[in-house]
Amino acid sequence: MLLKLRIWSSRLGNPTPYSTPSLKLQPFRLNLRAHISSSAELNPDQLSAVGTASKSVVPETKKFARKFLFVPPGVEPEEVTEKMVLPGSNIVIGPYAGHSQIKEIEFVKSSNRAKDCPRDERPEFAILGRSNVGKSSLINTLVKRKEVALTSKKPGKTQLINHFLVNKSWYIVDLPGYGFATASESERMDWSAFTKGYFLNRETLVAVLLLIDATIPPKRIDIDCANWLGRNNIPMTIVFTKCDKMKGKGRRPEETLGAFQDFMKENYKQHPPWIMTSSVSGLGRDELLLHMSQLRNYWDQ
Ligand SMILES: Nc1nc2c(ncn2[C@@H]2O[C@H](COP(=O)(O)OP(=O)(O)OP(=O)(O)O)[C@@H](O)[C@H]2O)c(=O)[nH]1
Ligand SMILES: [Mg+2]
Image: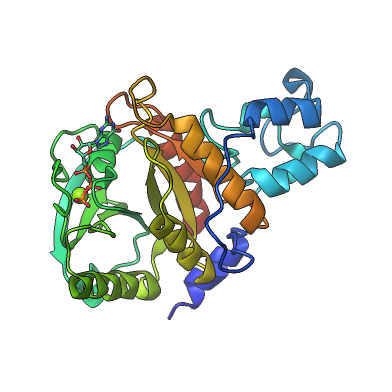
């Protein structure tokens, strides 16, 4: 039953952690734009657009693209130019990217078991992350509606698997948050079994959007979650949330992002796709939708 997900994941080059790593985080070092231009020395105007042959093959570019960028199906690492990388992300846009805007969305159902989820062939994206990271807010931002998914300052608002049908053709799935601090140990365990059941049995899952709060240091539980998805061949995109909080007293999003990049550099052969977003300013919204469209169109073919 899970064969399709596994094949999909390997075709996508889903990153698998080397092993269970220790949580070792260092200050921000990698500047993506600087690294691309310095290591690749590309003149974007001289190079061809997505899907056509590149005019020069720079081995360093290929190595950099393979390790640090998410290069989608249909693009060769040596073809990548700076123009093809979505702003505020490591995501390269390829020939499968297409219509991405959301015209209509309808709530379909809430389920408390994986086997009660809608049963059809439509592809879906699951939104996962710690309680209060901004999962429901991201859904509202993607669909440009205020209260499609219910949000709250109090963690633990979303308790079930909620399916939303988009443009009558694919699903966004809002999930309960993990690591809800005030839940008892046994409740957390139950939650975990319930959500894991969903991930391990959902054949139509295109990718998990794993949300990380950019305003606080990465937590062990986030790293564990990313590694669990990697080990189980479940494709993920890391979505940094609350990136509007650049000027406040808290941690700057670049620091969290840098710490994650260092972590991925040490522990993953290839970096998973990541993107910076804000549900307040709309940062990263259109870019994330475009990325989702390329994953979906590739899945659908
Ligand atoms: N500044 C800022 N606040 C945000 C952003 N996204 C969410 N929030 C706030 O964070 C709080 C939690 O948001 P939710 O969307 O309910 O979080 P959740 O992950 O769905 O939480 P649970 O359902 O409890 O797991 C709310 O007070 C939101 O207004 C963002 O991008 N920027
Ligand atoms: Mg929620």
